[in-house]
Length: 167
Image 1: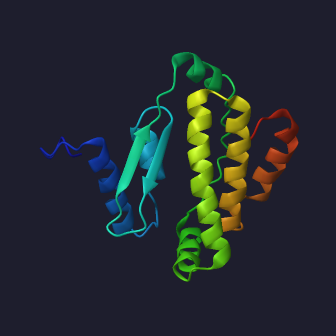
Image 2: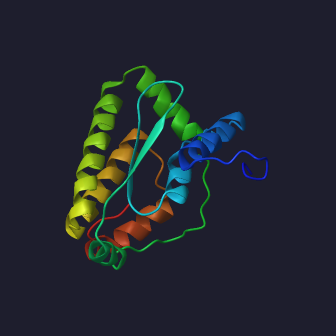
């Protein structure tokens, strides 16, 4: 769209532009989807707790053999279940703003897990990548109870013993 209007965007500009459109549409969307779609490979994305939101993205330096090994162990399951994150996100942000201790502690754990995951991905430690992915999912569920539909829980429970981790 930017190029069609004569305003080419950088990747960072596109991330922030989509975020702005989502906010105008009141979908309550964040920035993780556009970062995931625009930047290649594995990445660590961060933002400070300030407005306006500024997202920084670090594309992780992963050796080709590590990438091949990681890719051979990753499975994506599409359930076809749509959800609007708006109400979940609003509740999380309200509890964060109120400085609810469990939410503050979980956000700190999410940040620590993301940093540990960065190291596991770069080093190619598949077992650790899986374990941290599971930890991250448990932390996200603690932030927003009800995010895991019963069907997804049943699917995950059915394959849990066959996986290094899941989210």
